[in-house]
Image 1 (cartoon, rainbow, N blue to C red):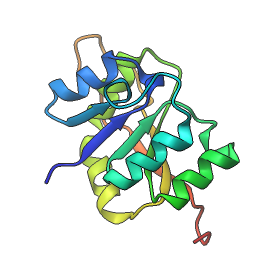
Image 2 (cartoon, rainbow, N blue to C red):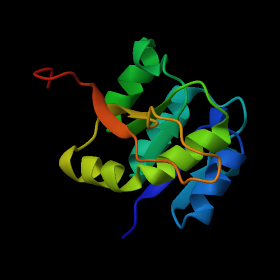
Image 3 (spheres, one colour):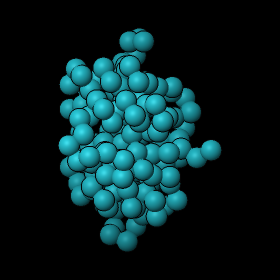
Image 4 (tube, rainbow, N blue to C red):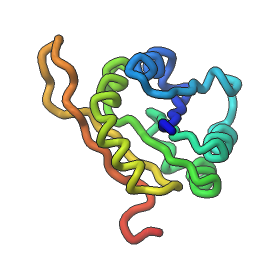
Length: 143
């Protein structure tokens, strides 16, 4: 069964559209929750559904109630890292998909991982190079 990804409201409409166009199974925040739905509430539902959440909110790890929701509801959370247009971040996610899938096979929730774009900039018509993914929470030896 393919991985179902959930995109947080902070990623807008273009990000999930690009992932869907690449053949990924994607659920948008707006299709399931009110705009003002508190993060711990949607994190609980995503964990219960077994979806992999994607956000651009790098502060989520430092918010005690949100981190507690990730842990309690066994959420697999991917944080897109970088200041770039969301379309560029989405293309980087797609380019990194094979590495992300390997990471998901090797790590069981709950966890928070950072997804980075490839650092070298290519020509406008080039497909993005795969980026990297690294575990952010729990830290090594933290489980």
